[in-house]
Length: 554
Ligand code: ATP
Ligand code: MG
Ligand code: MG
Image (cartoon, rainbow, N blue to C red; front, side, top):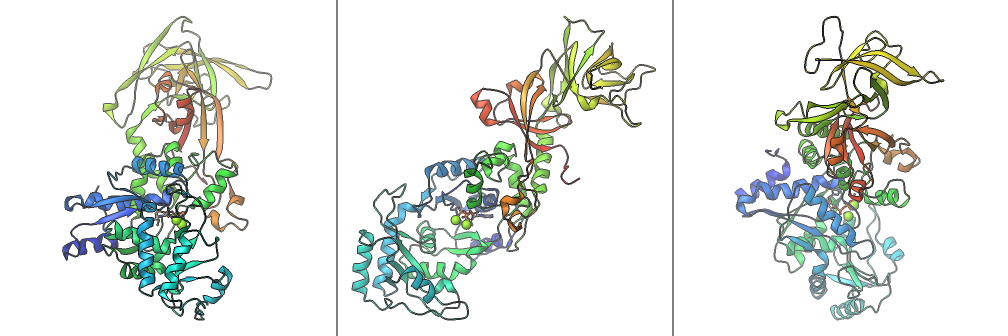
C-alpha cells in the first residue's frame, strides 16, 4: 500500500534530502495505564509506518513504555499493549524500552540544571504554587524559594531523593520565566515527591519526573529524530525544546503534533474505559463493544480494516471525528473477499421433507466463497429434517414474498428445490413445523416446468446441526458524541448493545473453527468464533462483527 503524503512525511523527506538526518527514528510511547484504543492505532500506524517506509535508510520505531508514574501503571497493561501492537501488524524488534530505566539519567539532567542555576527546589504548598502561577492575563509571582543558591538546591534535591520530604511538600522546578505568555513556561515542575513503589524500580525512588521533563529526555536518549504526538502537546513544545536545549543530551529530537483519531458513537479515553470496566457495564477491556484494540479483535474486526481507516483518514492538524461506519465499511469489504460462507439458522423452524426417507442422508457441495473460487467447496449434510429461519416461511405472504409459502417452492442453498405441502400450527396459531416435498434432480438444475422458484434460503440438517450461542453486538452508545451528553457519557449507553441468542442451529463445519476465526453467516452477517468460550471449550459462541449491511438508524 503506498502511503498518502502528509505534512509529517513532507518534513521527514526534507530532513533526509537536506542531510539533517540520515534516517528517521520514531517511537510509540504508551503509558501502561490501560489498554490501547482505536485512537492509538493512528499513532502506531504513523510511527511504525514511517519506519517501514524508510527501512532502506535504516529507519526504526521504538516501542517505549512511558512508565514514569508509579501510581497508575500495571504490567498487565504492558503485556496487552505489546500484544495489540503486534496484532496490528508492527514489529519493534530489539527496540523495546522502558522510560523507568532512565530514572538515573533524568536525575543527572536535573542536577545539571540545578548546577547551571536553571532549577530550584520549591517548598510552597501546591495551593500557593497554583495561585502564584498567575493567569493568561496576569503574570505569575516568583516563588520565595526561587533564588536559593545552587548548593542549597543540590542538598535539598538530594534530600528529596532520599525520602526526607513527604508527598506534596517539595518539588523541583525549572527556572524559566514566571511572566511567560505560555503558562507551561512559568517555572514548570520537573520532579515531585511520591513515596510510592514502582513496578520496575521498586522502592528505590521517592521522587518521580514529570511527563514534560521526562519525555523529551527519553526521546533524546534514544536518538529519536521526529517525536510525533497529538495536538494537546502543542503548547508544551517550547518546554520540550527548552529541556533538550538545556540538558546534556546526545541528540536533539523535534516534536511535531497531529490531530487525534476519534470515532462517532464512542468515547476514547482510558479514564472512561476504566469506569465502564470497573462498573461492570462491559465485560472487561476486550468486550467486543469496547473501542479498544483488543475489543475490536474479539469483535472480529481485521487489523487491516483498522490500518485502512488510519490510511484513509490520514495525518493532519485538523480536529475531526471519524464516522464509525467507515470502520464497519472497511471491515465488510475485507471480510467479503476473505472469509468462508456458512449456513446458520438464527431462529429455527423445522421443515420435514415428507418424501425423503428417515434413514437416508447425503451431502451436497456448497461453495465456500462466491467471491473467491480458490476457497473451494465444502460438503454439507442433508437429511429428512431441516432447520430454516422462521422468517423464511410466511403463511400470509405479500405479493413480492418469494421465499417459502403455502403451495410455494424455494431452493435450499446448494441443494434441492422444495415445495410446501402442509404445516402444523399450535394453539396460538404459530407455525411449529412445515411439511415439504423435495424435487428430485433439482440440485444445480433449474426448476422443472410448472414450478416457480425465485429464491434460495439457507438451512441446516437437523440431525447434523450443532447448537451455538450467538452474541449480537451493537454500538455501545446511542449518541453520536457521548462526551457531549448533558448527563455524562454513561447516560447515553445503548440498552440493546448486546443481544444473546441461544439455541442457534449451525452447520457442522462451525464446530471446527479456531478461536478468532471469522466467517459469514449467509444472509445474516459476519461473525467470529469467540476467543474466550472456544478456548474454554465449553460451548460454541460466535460474536457478530458487523451485519451484512448498515442497518443503523434506517
Ligand atoms: P488517553 O488520553 O486516550 O487515555 P493517552 O494519550 O493518555 O490516552 P498514551 O498512552 O499517553 O495515551 O498515548 C500513547 C501515544 O498515543 C501518544 O503519543 C499519544 O499522543 C497517542 N494517542 C493517544 N490517543 C490518540 C488518539 N486518539 N489519536 C492519535 N494518537 C493518540
Ligand atoms: Mg497519557
Ligand atoms: Mg491523555
